[in-house]
Length: 130
Image 1: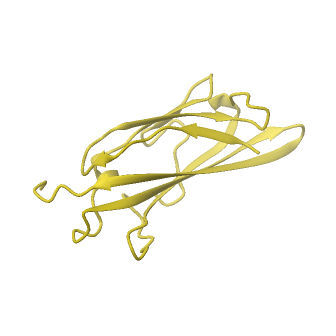
Image 2: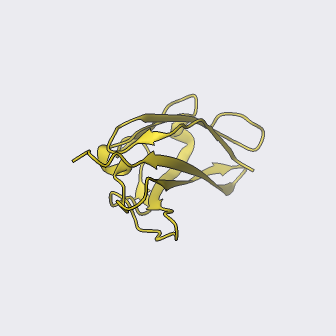
Image 3: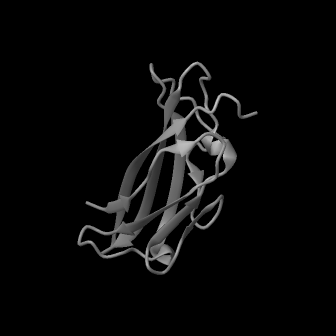
């Protein structure tokens, strides 16, 4: 199993926080960005009921050292969110969940290893934000 450890908090609508994580292999060893073959991000709404509406055109978007995401030689992932990533999709809700689904591949022992991790971000609706 490939691990992605991440720490997040309540996010205010239309802000641009940075989310950091470490991509690791099944032994807990960080995977350098240069060893990743692919890294994609899908971002969608999990409002109640879930609409699964894609947010900010991030639908299996390539993010391996592009589109606001970097992975360095130590496997350290940094995602600088854009304000469009934290826009409330349903203004009737006081808060909503934005689900970020990261998927990656890398070669190990002649095989392609596929990893994935989900980050659920609670975005607080600031009704007066234009």
